[in-house]
Image (cartoon, rainbow, N blue to C red; front, side, top):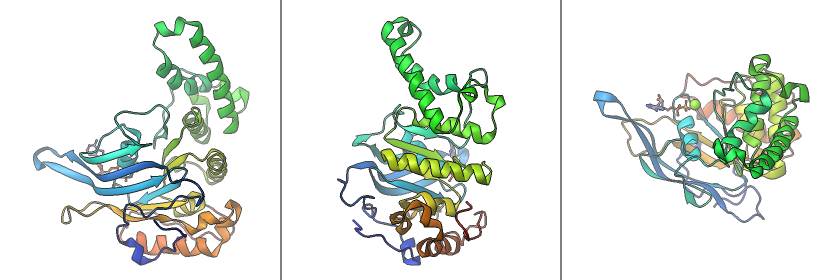
Length: 317
Ligand SMILES: Nc1ncnc2c1ncn2[C@@H]1O[C@H](COP(=O)(O)OP(=O)(O)O)[C@@H](O)[C@H]1O
Ligand SMILES: [Mg+2]
């Protein structure tokens, strides 16, 4: 275990040992929320046999961590998230969430996919309530008084969650076509937060947003995380956003057939920026140092990686 924040340096590009991530709060018991043990994923590639996407992934993510997951396009970030969600299963190894091997999608896990789609014929509020309602009861089960009690409470919670994400009562009655992209993303996050999930997985959740919406959602997500401390895994291509939000950084690299046993995990460690108050992170020396390292070293090999200018005044992720 690493007990103090570590400064990123090229040396850290070596695959990190499984236990390299220390809990965000030193005083908190290190209850491991998400573990990946020797995880590999290979897809069938027709006549060519199989294509390995992930190999030898060993990660231990303690409860309450805000993990930012970076890596070039196609290296397997979304696949890794789907494994944690239980939407997909590894070809080898094990994924364990809250002490149990992941066998199916846990309705308590919040998930915001890269491309979120709302039911076009349901209002915002109906969209947000749809998942938990369905998980609770089928058609017949809906005839019982207990279901209606559940539904009333769920409705209250859905309204609270949407309000928290900045939606007004009149917005909740709208249909998806009446919402901007930023508003739809707020709905997606409200839905993911509805069941107060202990684990929250977000896949490039903010990438399609304009800078000011993005920045307000970053602040909101940070405050929600700081309040209830779910374990978050947040995929982003944006290094500024990663350093602003994360307590732990994981960088994946693309699997190469020439090195079949090599883990995709290039970097897995705590971020020193997480020790600073949120509002001060962007203008800190730690931020500039980490930012430069990520831009210059970690992604130097990836021409597809979108680089951003270093933050000057505040964060313009
Ligand atoms: N269901 C699938 N079948 C075959 N190949 C897949 C499947 N899902 C993902 N892949 C491949 O796995 C690789 C990693 O994909 P993905 O996890 O989406 O990467 P990232 O999110 O880092 O961009 C890509 O080459 C992609 O084409
Ligand atoms: Mg992806």
